Image 1 (cartoon, rainbow, N blue to C red):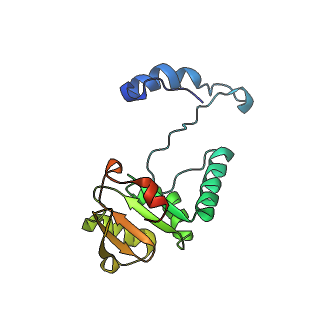
Image 2 (cartoon, rainbow, N blue to C red; image 1 turned 45 degrees about the horizontal axis):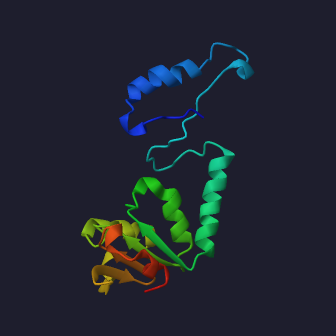
Length: 160
């Protein structure tokens, strides 16, 4: 794995030219003599490739954690269609209480995404308040329109 220092200041073209290219060698017929670089950062793709056993193990562990959890609090995650691995983990464990904290959590577009992820029609989310904040709730899912610093996350984990 190649380290990326100062990733926020990294120019992708320069990084590929100066770091990736010198670490790739496919000039040998013998595969054992070749060098390949496999990215550890995977961009949002609907079907993310499983690059190694480590990724398989991480997704499996994430699923186990969700299965064992009584309450799940998700902060700042958009539930993009490209992140179906995580969305599917939540979908499979639909009997868990899930609080989703995001500034746009109650807007129509977000509700439509929730319909796709959890299979509950956007019209089924009822207006409620949690910690004085505007929310929507359907079954065991609460959508809390707020930033993380506006919510007492500890209270969410305790069910309040």
